[in-house]
Image 1 (cartoon, one colour):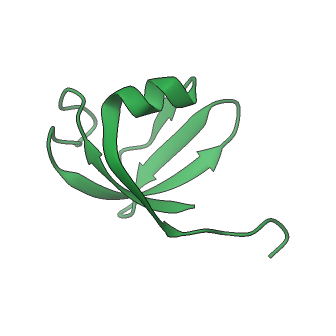
Image 2 (cartoon, one colour):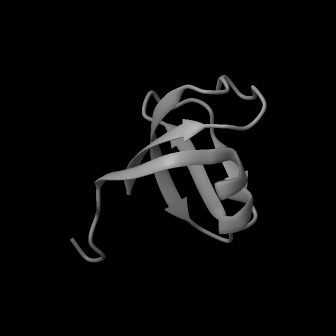
Length: 67
């Protein structure tokens, strides 16, 4: 799934507080994100942990299972 979201956490892994990013989301034993440019991979242990650092989340592309 591709989303656009505003980073509200502390500057880390190239993510800057207050900036918007297009992110690829994977759901594997937690939530894994990476920037559209391929950098900034980060694994969150739970949805709650992810939501503490991101705001104004909008789904851009939804990949259906099996296609």
